[in-house]
Amino acid sequence: MYNADAVPKKLLGIVMKKHLSIAIAAASFALASTSAFANSAGDGYFGALASHYTFDVEGASDDLNPTGLTLRGGYFLTDNVAVEGRLGTGLSDDTVSGTSTDAELDQLLGVYVTGYLPVNDVFSFYGLIGFTYAEATLSNRFASISDDDDGFSYGVGGQVNFTPAVSGQIEYVSYLDKSDYNLSAASIGLSYHF
Image (cartoon, rainbow, N blue to C red; front, side, top):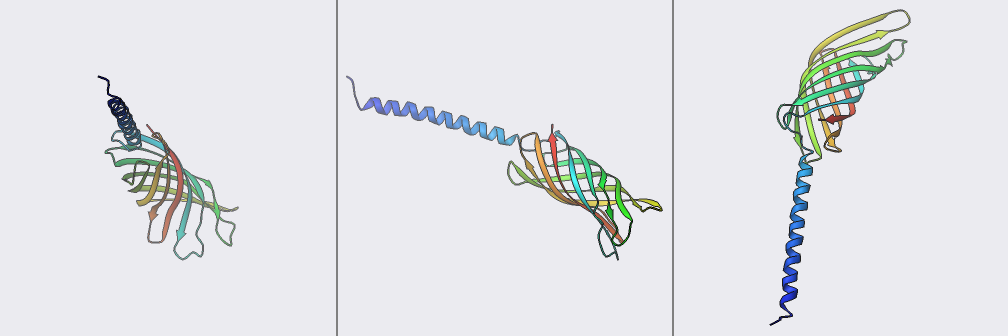
């Protein structure tokens, strides 16, 4: 015998199972796609940073602020730890206040260990420690003097993953912290992950 009340309940059960299956599939896809934003051991990256350097000399009334471009490349040893190399050069110089002497960063080379602290699948903080070699030039219309130095470096930053392959960074790094001067940089950049 045909039961009119049983048809809607049976139909409702089929519809509910179908919607539940779709919801489970959608959640699985969402989790799989967001986990693609996470770093993975064995993944590499390269990118560039636009840097605003600060050369703070002890006893000087003003800091020097040349700008530069820094190329970076790294490799994840674990999901949250990478080894990274950097190569930088100056783009513009800055004039020593009250003189006609210009200061420019000629080159910057460094090797660092970078540790990432993920906040979620899109954003993470990072810190880096390592070693930097830098060379700078002071020049005016009469002479040009270049000098170089090296030492311990440290810094902090934040990274936003725009896609699984493209991320943006903003950071502050103290490249050289000596007794009579400090060379640091505030930078913003983009990186490609592969």
